[in-house]
Structures are given as structure tokens and as C-alpha cells.
Amino acid sequence: MKRIFIASLIVFSFYSTNLFAQQSEEVRQVIASIFEGMKSKNTDLIKAAFHPDATMQTVKSGENGSELGSNSVADFVNRIGSSPATTILDERILDYQIKVDGDMAAAWTPYEFYVNDNFSHCGVNSFQLIKTTEGWKITYIIDTRRKEGCK
Image (cartoon, rainbow, N blue to C red; front, top):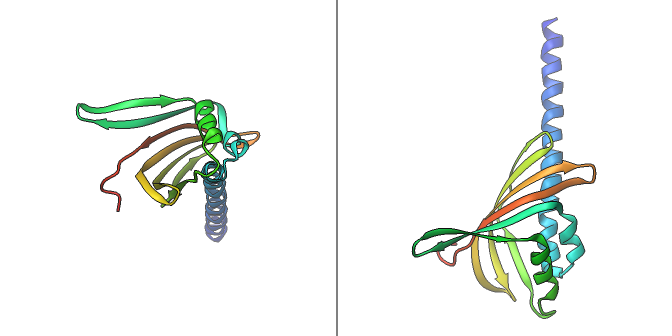
């Protein structure tokens, strides 16, 4: 009986680890699709990553402390789609730290941002996602932006 219990634990542990790895990869792919869409100006790819009720915010550091800036996904998509064809927007994700619990996931992604291969700024994105019948969808993003202390 003890051997069956131990074997069951090993099988469950293997299954759980594989399921988490699969879900983490799915979350990573959804997040990466935004940045692929930005670079290629493929607004359909960007829109597909978001839940219809998604929110975007930015932490703005100022002389009097931090402020919160908000933006709609529609505005973000429009800005990407209307940027000049010669402008390459390249957000390079340095790491993906992903946590999954059932149908909810969170990701922390440090990044560097380049415009036409020229460094612009760095920071961190914090994503919240849910799993829908269509797959993982981003419900919330908040990011930081700075020009110093990036490397």
C-alpha cells in the first residue's frame, strides 16, 4: 500500500509539473505576441492577446513621487498601428517570471525598449491573465519606465 501511495505521488508530481510548464509556456506566448505585434505593426496579433475588459497603466516617477497613468488597449493598438512604417518598436523581454493558479496567471517581465535599435528606456511589466475558452487573455498590465539603472 505504501508503494502505491508513493508511486501515485510521483505520477501526480510529474503531471502537475508538466501541466504548470505547459500553462507557463502558453502564458509566455501570449505576452510575447504583443511584442511581436508591436515590432511588426500587426495590430490583430496585439488585440488577440487582450481580454475585452483589459486595462493598461504606467507608473510615472516624478519629482513629487509616483503617479499613475492609464491607457486603453484600443488607444495602445491605434498608436502602434499609426506609427510610421519606418519606425521599429522593439521591446526586448529579459526574463519571464510566471505564476499560475488554475485559470489565473501573473507574469513579471523586466524589459529594455528600443526605437530603431536606439535604446529608449527600461523597466518591468506586470501582467495579470485569465484563461478563457479562447485561451489565455491579458486582463491587466502595469509597467515602470526609466532611462537610468538599466544595465
